[in-house]
Every structure is written in C-alpha cells, then in structure tokens.
Amino acid sequence: MRSVEDLSPSDRHGLEAALEEARAGLAEGGVPIGAVLLSAEGEVLGRGHNRRVQDQDPSVHAETDAFRAAGRQPHYRGTTMVTTLSPCWYCSGLVRQFGISRLVVGESKNFTGGHDWVAEHGVEVIVVDDERCVELMSGFIAEHPSLWHEDIGQELP
Amino acid sequence: MRSVEDLSPSDRHGLEAALEEARAGLAEGGVPIGAVLLSAEGEVLGRGHNRRVQDQDPSVHAETDAFRAAGRQPHYRGTTMVTTLSPCWYCSGLVRQFGISRLVVGESKNFTGGHDWVAEHGVEVIVVDDERCVELMSGFIAEHPSLWHEDIGQELP
Image (cartoon, rainbow over all chains, first blue to last red):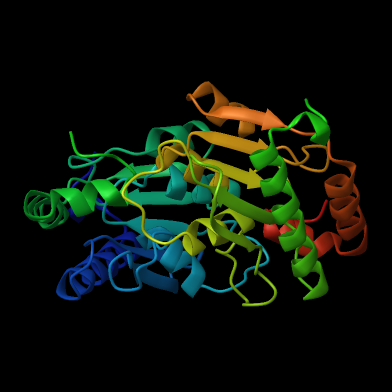
C-alpha cells in the first residue's frame, strides 16, 4: 500500500487523470470510476470512465473504456492501467489477457477485485490508499446501492 | 467434452446462433468469433461477434458484444453465455464477475482461455467439440496470424 506521494510522476499523473474521469462520470449521473492506460513512456494512450448509466451499456467499465479509447495496439508490453478502484474480474481479466505490464489501483477499500490475481500472473501491481478515491466511491455506494450492485453483477443483500 | 447432438435444445439453438454471428464477422473481414447470452428460459437476451476490425475497437470480443446487446440486467442468475471459442481471460472474467451461471464453449482446440477457471468458481461449463467452430477458427488463424495474435494480446512468435 502506498500513498499518492510515493508514486512516480507518471503514475501520479495517471491517477489524477483517472480521478478526473471518475468525477466526470459522477457529474453525468454515472458510476464514478475512472481509468487511464499509460504507454511504457508514461504517456496517456487512452482514458475513460464507467458508462453503464450514460450509455445504458453494462460492458463499459472504466478500464474497458480506457482500453477502447487507446485503440488497436500491436501489444501492451510496458503499459500501465491506472484505475481509481480495484478492478473487477472482468477488468482484471482484461489486464491479464492483453499483457498489460503494470496496474495502479487508487483504492481497494470499497471493493477488492482481482488485483492480487493479476499480480500472481506477473503484473506489477501498486495499490494506493487515495482518500479522494475512497470517499468518491463510498459516497456513491451509500447513495446508490442498487446501481453499484448492478455494476458488479451482485444482487442487493 | 460433448458433441453438438448432446446439447439441450436451447444450448444447441444458442450455439447455432453464435456460429451465425462468427460467420457474419468473417464476412465483414473480422475475427470470426460469435456469442449469445441466453436467459434462464433459453431465450436470446443478446448476440454479437468480435468487432476489433469492423469498429477498430479492441474491447469488443464476441462475449462482450453479446453482453452489451443484452443491455442492463438486474442480475445474470440462470443465464448462459454461449461462445464459439473458449473465452479469453477478459471474457472469462466477464462471466465470473457478473455471475453468469452457465458457459457453453463451441471449441477449445484453437485456443483455451479461462473456462476451467470459471468452472472452479461455480459456473457450469460445457465444452463442445464442434468441428464447424474448429475449422472456422483454424482457417482464420492460418490466414491472419498477426490479427489473431493481436486479438489475444500476444506478439507473433
């Protein structure tokens, strides 16, 4: 677990951009999760956010939106997926399948998906304890529990 | 491993529809993988195919396209994902995350993704040995090896 201050400049820049995406999603009435795909050189290849509500599309999680925005790539060697929340199995599978080299997670308090699993399969994983990400998500979950559960395919307890 | 003839009527209907989707993808110049999401009652909720080439979108695998076509669902209990090819980790993660109950795989000779993994996590998995699916995919891989490797995030050997 790291603090935001301990991140490299490019990871930190990526996390700030992912947080901007998450906030944009919230402003649109959507699930506030954002993600950015960085090149090996730390440049933004693609960025995006969850669009379940906005596009009525359950397949667009933040990570898949950033991946899509990056367009077709011959390979993902050296790239980093930065996301505001621990990736669900769907998005963890994306990281593993496409050989994305690194994963930076803004927080995993509100939800823990497959980040340990991708680490076991060779991905460098950095979990950050970013209170801004935590508060954004916990506020959303408290306000929209059924939407949040729908987004992760769970029925309300 | 089952033969097509051993499938239930609705699984068989789903596999025929998935194969139609895969063939449509091939006709469009795309990666020939198709999928269908069936309701608990065996009705088609959504169907689709890989659109990497057609939409220049690497996030649209057959399974994610069928999932998207089904729209927002409150839950996936009882649903079946039918796909012409063993699902990659990205699509296996989709099945696991959203609690899709069953997975029918047309073939796993040309590629084996995460179908054993989702079975370990409670999904009922049926792997079929459908020669039509095998030939469609092996022909495509032989003709377009670099496109196929791009689609699964691997560099050509």
